[in-house]
Length: 406
Figure 1 (spheres, rainbow, N blue to C red):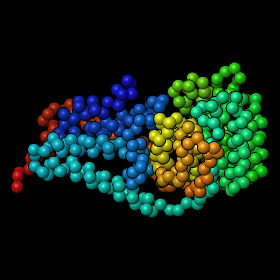
Figure 2: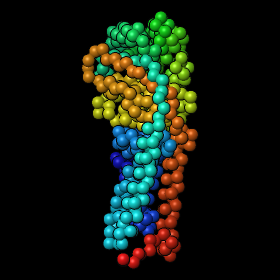
Figure 3: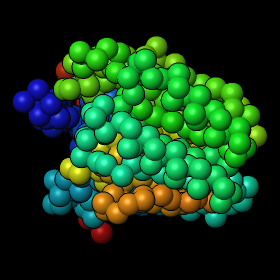
Figure 4: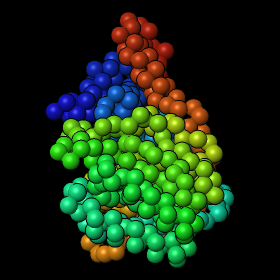
């Protein structure tokens, strides 16, 4: 109910403010209110950016390129502006055709500019060097991997598949979130096994697992471990943002710092699943990052949506992303959000994916200016609200003057 009430605030703002404004000014109440609502929700909610309307457009690549300059807020603005522009034109339908065409023409011109810029950006995207990367999923899904009873067979399976992928040329093998459960007493032996394999095959291995803190408790750490090709531990990273529910009740959160390491391919960073949905993590991305690892664990109802959300992150921050996923859609995206490879969960075993991964960042303004577009929308909404309560005589300066019929 709370989420529904929050989602209705742009409509309420439009109802209360727009009717007190001239038509052309009123047209911007709904889109600015939509951006303000989604931005505030993203910043303050434990759900991060879940529910943002922009995720409905990830398949429209010319449009979504704009997020590299303003974040996803411009997509929500354009969607809401289209609705209010059509509504404004309808309300002006009895006026001269020029007045009716003004809101539609303004929107169409702006959308054309955005789409043209997006098309140009994709057409002029430079080729990136490809690095052989691989994803391997456990043979058990549907949360059986949370149980210590399945730890030994999953461990043997994952290391065997990782070894095979490394022998076939993969320079980096990435496991999904919660691949298996490891008892705290067994962690060092588990890590040493990974280190020996990485050193032998001269390949980096990104492990991801549940670390059970005590045998008698469900308390755990949701951990990612990157082993470099020399066998050295490159990072030991714990998930920071717990998904409301089981994870929030039982997971000990990490520090909130993004994982960072240097591999032969360049600077690699990482975060786990739900962390990618929070700007506090993504804002830590380094300009020199050539690849972001995002081990994840979903469920069927959110599999498509969550993959699209991560695809949007790739465009916003201009960083390629490899996302191995339990119970969902594993995928790799380049720095422009283009799909490089996917691996849907279909129950087949082994589940592996070899990827010729284009590493390297793309130019993006959003990481530098942050949520400036959202701030401007909030300021514009506040100005419209203030103007709406001014005495009526001041409204004449914004009221379209009637045009004589030809």
